[in-house]
Image (cartoon, rainbow, N blue to C red):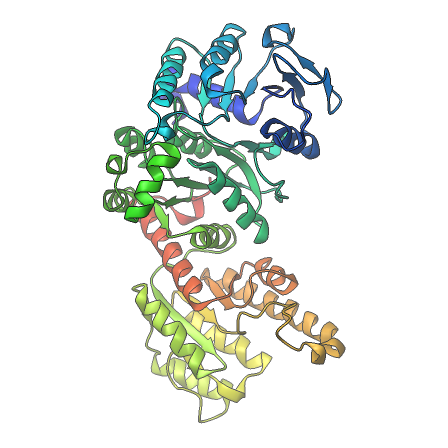
Length: 500
């Protein structure tokens, strides 16, 4: 497919690479000593991450000539080396002048961190004029730009964390994210770190004076380090171009569009300058559905889908089997499933006969959910799971093991566990391996109700088991995975090839 692109598109891809693989970075506006300035927060993150390239600091009137061991240049013209990427952190009024200097020195890519442009539409028209001036400059240049009003870039491959925000410790992985809204990127990064989801790349694009959200989604589609794409936005620039790009995306793509409420729409205008009518919620929801894109309702939704789709096969249909040691949990799970339009399968007579032999009591539910009450034992759950997963009436299995309790919850007395810790850990590992073999054999997902953080969760997730702490989140994730499989079929893409 790459061979069919025109020269302009290929050139854009080469230019976008400089945001994620810069060999040199200049920070303009980095002459203050105060560690809490925007420039110093970003610089500290870069140094802590051990960025592999060269760093140059620039400030017209620096407070010191050396900051954090780095020389401060008075002008970008004083740097006698090629610069791939520039971070602009100067007052909005002088940003256009700085952009001109970057273009003149053949800088490849620019990130404008500075705010005070089109997002100030409600109270200051001068910001819009400044942004138009920047856009005019960019049209005459080969340099590419993101921003203004964004929070930087993260790239695992060159140990780059040039973001404005807390230093989130992200494990290596294959998720790449683009956000139109900087703090959203930080929130998503924190959520990824909490769930131990590996991040490959992240970029916050701000007001989209040049490159757009869809440009980066398009780039991630062909990026070898990216297997799953996440996108957050509060508005879409150039919907026609958005449709042309998104309809051809084959990698898993989850989209979180906020600003759905009236209050949210008003906040969008003052945040990124996007007009609410530009891409309204009902239009966006319908369009994403037509484009076969998974739409998340919030950060939990977003990360649950990413986590699940990275470890589990996709359900072929919307029918679930539920195994539970308590009837109430089965009822609650069923309610959540049906609210999402999913189906609790009716058991075949043959399945009931097999379960009778396995459970060996008369008082189990004899229906789905399979409520085993006090007849639960490790052997019975393994055999019951096999009976359910082997049926062509069930597309996924939900095991209601626990109550969503954290391992170290201070509201539960865990003292009884101390003498059994070794046994419990051994049991969990054996149970996880058994479930993992069933997943591989039947190519159907298994969901477990339990806290999704901690040692137990990691044991299960390592075997491809989806671990979530609430009925609602299990149901929502099941639905999104089923939608993903349905969309793949409509696009004529094999689920086995979905990450190629």
